[in-house]
Length: 502
Image 1 (cartoon, rainbow, N blue to C red):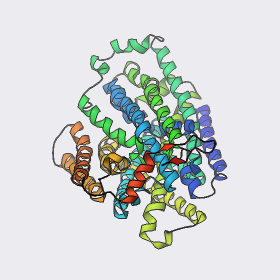
Image 2: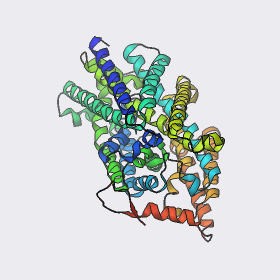
Image 3: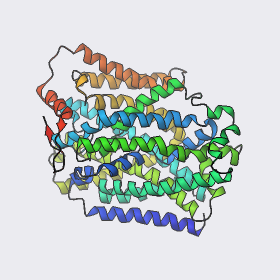
């Protein structure tokens, strides 16, 4: 890191803070803070959804997998997300937006009290908050590793620096600051990724190297499916990301909730899908080619950072590091904002009547305190990430395995086909999924596909089975009206486009 690198990195952080304080003027109440008043245009929502769907862990954990596993990373990670977002554009994204226009929700779990009941809502809300502690903690740990490689700063110090900077702008500007920073971060990632792509390609002989590197790498590196990421694993993982990227990961649901209409939410999901189809190819190429430039690395997770230092001149190293920061901060800050909405809108009012029908000013104050406390806990998890299997362990094993049971009743509860799945189905499915997680992770020696897939499959089967057993029971009027409104067609009007034709 030279002066120009530090200058570029510092300029990036200054821009983030400026956006945060500029967004402060746009936040008049909790609706602006949590869902930007439902006014985020589809293109900005789609970019934010894409950027918030991956973090600096891509440049650490996934860079290591690209180094050792080759092209399989694209087939088990990027392609399933493309498929998930495409399906979700027609099935889930519009329904999230309609929830806001029909129920005025400001958090992804707020509607669950009506769809099921308050105890079910609390189980899902608390489970999701605890799950996010591990997910966000993994992201901080990843950025700490990157900072350590680039600058020599201790990992713990890097974790704290990145966490505190994100905390400032998200607590000041809310979701507006988050999505606007996502756009800036997308531009920075685009520049950094293209620079690395071109430099590595020229290093290896020009455009022909894009296809030519595979003859120089181990033959298995060009296999789309490699142990432990087999075709069976990809199918299971595709189902998990269908849940995660369509709302099971709450900050991604917020992007759709904040869209002006279901039609706009659909377009934003399709834009995110296209970005996941194309961009990872450019992003991963330097990682795939890294063994030719940096052979026999002891720690492949450092390959992308070392590649940057090896090939890029002063200033551009700082740009790439800024892009890595951007990837992490966009995801962690949006998570913090969404978790704050769940705690403020759904958990605290049930815990104490003092938090019921709060004024907009008081709700903002509580949200910012919640953001501070949650972020502090995630930083503690990040510092102790080795206890949970490191970054890859947190990302793949814990998060991927646990997100399913919590997401099943949230996502499928939006669909009329599951209208008979009530509170019992929701609670039993979560408990069954978590029990499956404990058994396959701590009681049996099984493959990664079984380890990750068992909890979500058990949860889905249980949820569906209980609903089928209740198929002859009448559906409450409130639930029936809710599902009908979410499936309704919207009117094309000159206004905000949010009215529903029921």
